[in-house]
Image 1 (cartoon, rainbow, N blue to C red):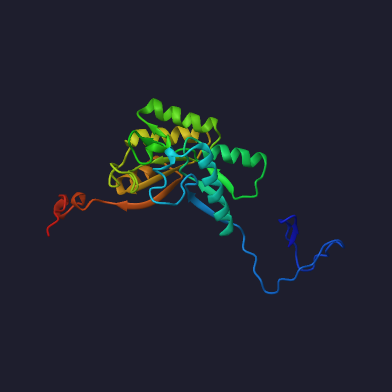
Image 2 (tube, rainbow, N blue to C red; image 1 turned 120 degrees about the vertical axis):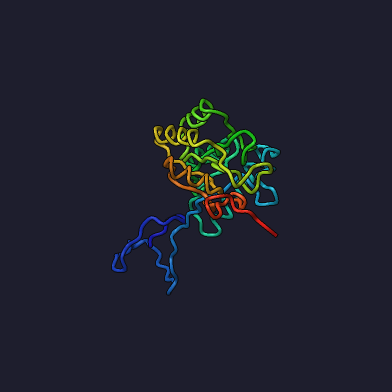
Length: 235
C-alpha cells in the first residue's frame, strides 16, 4: 500500500517493485480496513438530549462547530463517508459544497438538506415543512437547485417530535407519489423516514428508493381481530 502525505495513493501486489525513494514500513500481520460509510446521520445535532430540537437556537458558528466535531468523531471511528439526512436550512449542504472545493480531510458528505415534512410534522423545526402539492413541488425544486444527493421525506411521525404520531402516515399517498415523481424527474433518489406500517406500505407503493427505520408499527387497537374487526385490548 502506497501512502503519500497521509493519503493512500496506491494498492499494489506483494511483488510490486517500490520506487527507490519509498520508505518501507512493515506492520506485520496488521489488517487494513476500508473506510466505513455511516448511512444515517444528523450532523447539526450535538448528540445531547433533545439535540435536534435545540438546533434552531444555535448560531451559525455553533452549527459549524457541531458539524466539524461530529465529522471528526466519525473519522476517529473509521468512518470516511457520512450520509446526512437531517440538515437545518441547508447548512450541511453548504458544508458539503465547501468540502468539495477544498478537501478538509474529514469524512465525505452525502447530503439531503432539511427533511420534507408536513406543517408541525416530524422535525419540522429543521426548515422542511410543506403543505399541499404546490409546496411539495417547490421543495423538491429547491433541493434539485441546491444539488442535494438525496431527498429525505418524513412519511410518518417520529419518536423525537412531540405531537406527531408514529402510527400513521403524514402525507396522503397522492402527495407522497408526487414528491417521488418530482424527485425522480430531477434525477434524485428519495428515502423515507417511516415507522408506521401504513407509511411503509405507502413508501413501497410510490417507489421510494430507501426506507429509514421501517419499524412497521401498528397501534394495537387498529390491528384486525377475528372476522376483520379491530382487535380489542383488555387488561
